[in-house]
Length: 251
Image 1 (tube, rainbow, N blue to C red):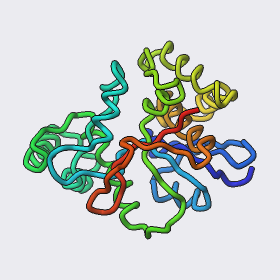
Image 2: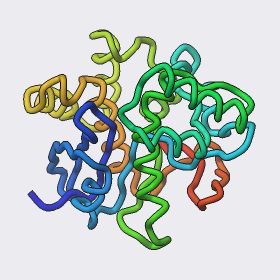
Image 3: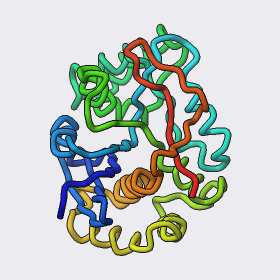
Image 4: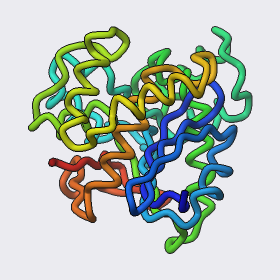
């Protein structure tokens, strides 16, 4: 198939899982060990949407996109982790595989000093991936391709579902079926793509929710036709010029 133009990405145990659509609707499923390798492969894509915090705060107050996302998601608000400060992310990047209590306490110490609040274990666990993406994007020029923007899967599903949050957790079968049903309204092959990914990759490499998250991002990228909306409406940028936003598209 031709190279993908529209790509959705989520972190997974093996690195980064992607769903890519070409301009004719063909799709491909890939896993990359490094985010830089993923961007190299998709260098000619029009848009890459990734489920990871991109613009990072460096002072107290957090990100407006995180607080707004929690507000609209209701019972699903716990799926939105507060983005850590860049200072804490850089600390964890020095020893990305260290998930010890000592490393967690060190991250907490910096976060409390800079942001005036602690860091959740969930945020700490994904910090190395945040740092990986941050390092890659900070090193690119302003006109670099492909365009890379942040999404949150539950905000994408909320938007596809006419601004109604999902009722069930995606870790359970009912929740997975709920999300597949919502996405099928726009991409009828959703279940086929999801099941192909389940067959193609082992769960220790790509979890079932990783597939759904990358898929909703890819469908958003493919069908938005340049009409992405942002949360908040006028997103600020961080000190590196990266937008502190979540993007979505309403069918």
